[in-house]
Image (cartoon, rainbow, N blue to C red; front, top):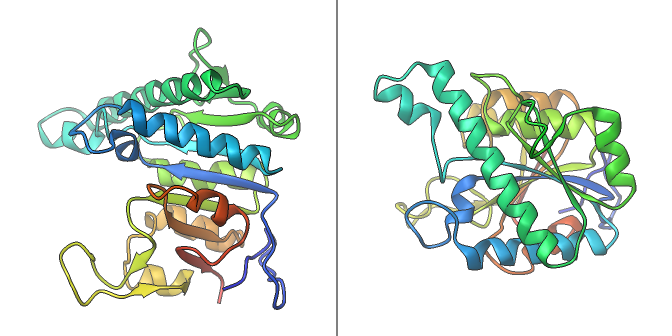
Length: 251
């Protein structure tokens, strides 16, 4: 498996590290082995790995979800208005972003939280050129509040921000080591894909990201790497262009 550049081309026979990446983390990853909330040991380990990636020379931005605190769909299912529920979910992502920022800063790195919702007391407003400048200065970015709009997932926010900052790839950190033909937790015959095309992933509904996010990446030649973020060292290997997880790109 070879790493792809941001324009959809591939390096012939040689793996190449990405120079700028957008890492998508679900809120659930922050829970560790707990039932909800934020596990201190887990967030400190993630912070350490993010710093390791940044210090390797990679410009790093993160989009984080809020499912460990609040899920918009669960609120809607219990009778809450969908728009209100989604805004509450966006605020949950800001809480996670601030927690991750604190963990990173306590380990000596420079980080900025940028919010699509205007919350000037705790986060910078999203301005694309300013965000890019932070990356160029070697600061880790954490994007909160998704796109700032209801009805859009953090997957879509990750794809959108990746395009806007001109990242080389979207890295999706999950609790499994790639994309499988079925859920490996329930199907012992599930097999892992090393590579997939966007069309295959969409047609087979493999759940890499939601359809809007996948289509956005496909249309803009943005490769996606799905990998196990719970395994120490995998994040650095992924940004280094090693064959970890599943690479989704144009056929």
